[in-house]
Image 1: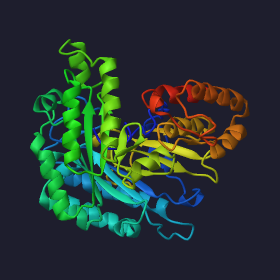
Image 2 (image 1 turned 120 degrees about the vertical axis):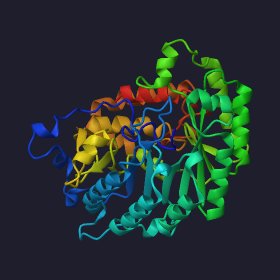
Image 3 (image 1 turned 60 degrees about the vertical axis):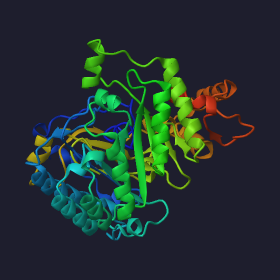
Image 4 (image 1 turned 90 degrees about the horizontal axis):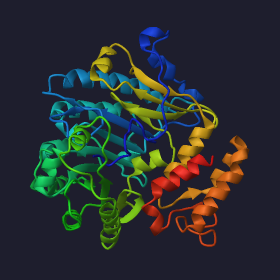
Length: 447
């Protein structure tokens, strides 16, 4: 479970994608359908997501695209990935074709820490050649370069290569500090591996770390969850992501649930776990800035904020998705595309730059407004009405009244802060956090 939105291939879950025909059915090739002219972009892209799909083992709760690999295909994958990155690099250039510094890079998976060390060195060297990482390497405010690491595959040698390549943050998938819960999730590490990985990162000089935890695991008690949080806090990380276990349709975890192996966690207990998380982490100054994410002030995930604030991002690797503003206004030209989620198809395009895509969302102003409202109300900062309402009035003027009415109802119900204290934002209250998804759905439906 990574420190990133629910699925980088679907940064905004719940919005369906339009499936395009296969590349063999259209001309030019499907990849060219999203090869937008960088000069037509509203501004250069400042964020990049890279998906490394390799895993030793598929965790039972995970529905991200991954491929169990014995390292046989890693070299071919990196060769293909570098070609795709070279094709994407011009999207980070200004009108004079000068590279503009990237603000964020996130390398997820899969298990990126499984990649061979020589291939890591090659990838990071090429990234520094293709893109301007000067702000990231200087650790300028608002920048970060994150790599996901599994506890058992994080080594001193790997971390030194990452640091030399500009990486400023690692996200470690702890999930639990109870061995039997790790077994339930089919995680391969033991709890001691987590502390070891963070100690190595500190010793090497990686300035920031994040831990992922999962709650509402079958048969998990409130006391056990409290112990997990207490242990995580003792490791002095600057960021913690806490996700409730979800049963995705195609996972082994869901199959085990339907087979009667266990029952899902009681909703009241899950709510108690959610509330305990906020209280315990806040006592150590890790503030909730998004419904599932907590950080020391100034240590929020800048890459995830780029997703949630509807900024542009490029994406490379199988199953990765991107968001590009290919017009003067993002509302009129906000394109999304998703690479095909199979390694075989990805490698088949070895002689081309852009990857084969499985879906493409053309500009849809109403959808973008719905997504803006959905992601913003899951943030502590809330939805900026001074920016949002004029756009809503311009694109869907008939929605202005029902949207305002719905917002006022949520304020009256105590789920959003009242206008008297938050006149220009829609921000959830302490009571509203538990119902953030419901609030988002209600606001989206009113647009």
